[in-house]
Image (cartoon, rainbow, N blue to C red; front, side, top):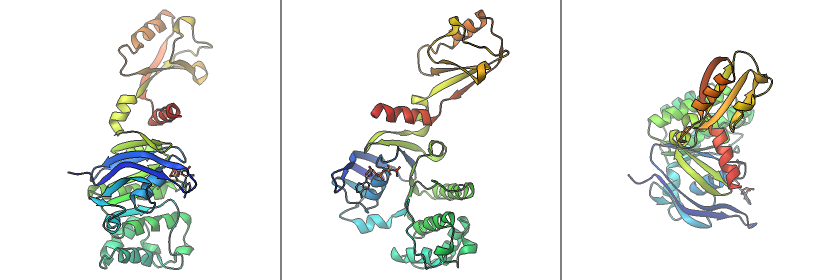
Length: 308
Ligand SMILES: Nc1ncnc2c1ncn2[C@@H]1O[C@H](COP(=O)(O)OP(=O)(O)OP(=O)(O)O)[C@@H](O)[C@H]1O
């Protein structure tokens, strides 16, 4: 199957001469959830707006559902729902009408049953007759999502959907995302929350300074770049790491109550056997051992640092 979103060699230089996208190529398969991670100003919003046909590209091409987003923008846009970072609502209109008009904009026939289920999913049903200007910030964000989904888009863009929202909204949001995933909707989200990307995305793309540093399946990224930590709880705390134990990757933590050894899971020798032997030789009593994967956060910070 051809990708539902195809980005080829995309560049964007803003009027002031700043290049926000510098040759981005990316294919997104129908039904997948992809998270775009990157520091502030990396170009995530510019990429999304260009795919959505809101920002004009300076070079390259973007197709959504096989439609060029510049030449054939109407057909491309018809498939897309966008939840922007900034509020863009009709303040004097009610919640219900905001969602209903959005359907109308896309030339969809009235479907009150669908709008009702959408508003219920987003915990907006009770507020359907309230004017948008009377709502709290979190509620307004819910309305933005309802608006974006009102015409049942096949591709949904969420630009930092959970930045500054409370736990309840975050939960509602992920419930909606799960339901959409079940319906085969393709979802592209930008986020600063790495745990979020790790938890819900099938693939993760890392963007820095207008370029895609990598795009990889979430679990492969974890595996390929993942380092592991071995945590050694000591029966008695140590004031200092004994000379014979000192090595790269070993740290004394928690006031000497534990040692943490970071190692590469793919290295020929992880150094664990030698470390454990040396611990025994040094006469240290172990209370417990545990391992954990180092988080995507560290991987991400490492990548962006390398790029800089
Ligand atoms: N209309 C514009 N005119 C000039 N420069 C712009 C414009 N919009 C964005 N930029 C610049 O392009 C760069 C990328 O911005 P963009 O909003 O795409 O980044 P981002 O990755 O979404 O960042 P954030 O995580 O802060 O939202 C930034 O340096 C920004 O200042």
